[in-house]
Length: 70
Image 1 (cartoon, rainbow, N blue to C red):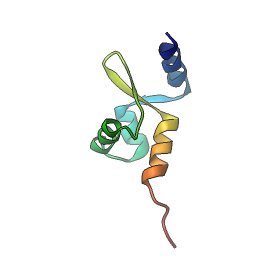
Image 2: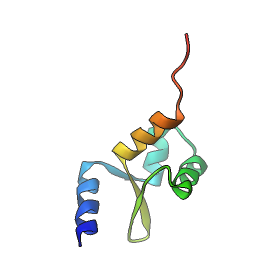
Image 3: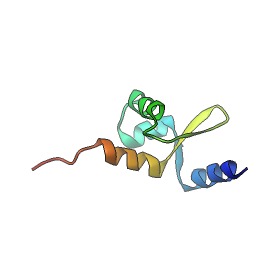
Image 4: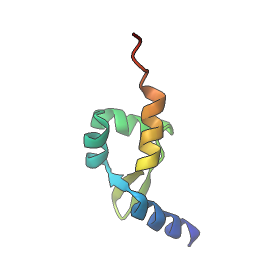
């Protein structure tokens, strides 16, 4: 029951389905699915859909994107 409550909180705070995560991040659908499969990008399912919390997506992007060097 606590997990369901957590999912509700995450949805309210900005969880997004995979298509929105792709558009938001600029990464490919394959890259996102690979990260989820590898455990570096947390997600949860609701029904048959997968959702990613916006904060987790931003954290993952921070790990994979290198700052440009001048």
